[in-house]
Image (tube, rainbow, N blue to C red; front, side, top):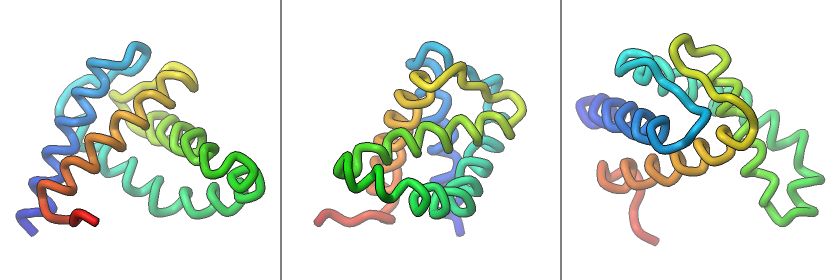
Length: 117
């Protein structure tokens, strides 16, 4: 339980860091970042499987690279539903989702959720 709470906190800090790095992406504070992490998780749990299924043919044609676009769209949807978190377009969403994915991999690896292959 404590491990999940600490991951939530670190992912909020990671989202704030990504918002500072990526132009066109803004987050209004730490509470907005905490809420955004919850919304991002819910969007990934509910909508991601549907989006990946619907885009399967184009994903196969691009050898999986279209997944980056799906991630950016889901990141933008999460920003739309989160007060205090905004993404201004597809390119900030693409870069933001990519950087946030990298940072979340690092956080999950450090917390023991991911193990080296």
